[in-house]
Length: 276
Image 1 (cartoon, rainbow, N blue to C red):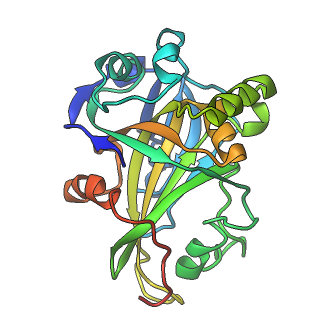
Image 2: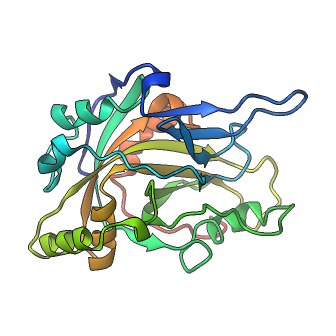
């Protein structure tokens, strides 16, 4: 982590915001509907269920087709930001979001692209170790999108933090020439900045029936800007900055959990040791 700012009020009325969070209506006699991230009026991602005992989740939906880059701030983001409270950038992207409290955190990461079901996939690795396979499908959860893994660390002996960067559209949609441009910039030492709206979901199975039972803290950065930058950084093995706007009111976590994030992000990266 580079720096974090103070929580601040951003955004406008949810129905008018380009991005907002919502829960589908409850069916008669049933449980609450899906928890969703919505972009331009269309459900873009299904998120972890509200109960907190279901597996952590981000799942891209068929209507996720939009990115939210803003031309007016691109020059500011070509290089590294020095301050997570950069008023021009935060105000510009804050206008896309639903009204609420957001914690700005400026991170420096070295992303690793993960394909679901392949090496390094959280959903078929660490998550299965704790929750097992889906009881109906007999398969791991499937996010329907490539994603980036960037960081993990121990919260304590009974909890572990996993960090993900999730593109709104898959890297295969990126313009090859722009990815190459950023690879060239990074080769000369430039560290560009991406922008994301983020959630922290803390999930734990209701009962202990696993090989490794503990709380999973899932910190998910949904990219608003920087799709080409993240792919370039992953391809070239270079760092990139992320200005994260953590949606405090939309996270599946207690306020004290969210308040701990800046300190946890200063820890050394460490993998989970089974049975710790």
